Image (cartoon, helix red, strand yellow):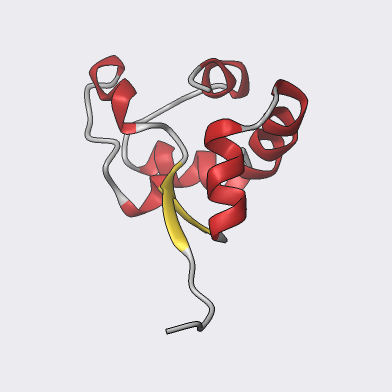
Amino acid sequence: LGGQYVEMHHVIPISHQDEFESSIDIPENIVPLCPNCHRKIHNADEPSIDVMIVNLYTDEFTRGLAHRGITVTGAKLRSFY
């Protein structure tokens, strides 16, 4: 207890699964966040969330999803938040 830990976050929220034919509950859609950042992405103001989305929407992220047959634009991803 009292040690450092991370929380796992679905970049495309599971609540939007019905917008995709393939499962989004996959490793390519999950990133580790510190507890503060995890709370922030769910509860922060719009400008803060925008910065976080830009940092999460990487070429590696989109390639990983594309490998699974999932595509999402940055604007679409932002609309989920």
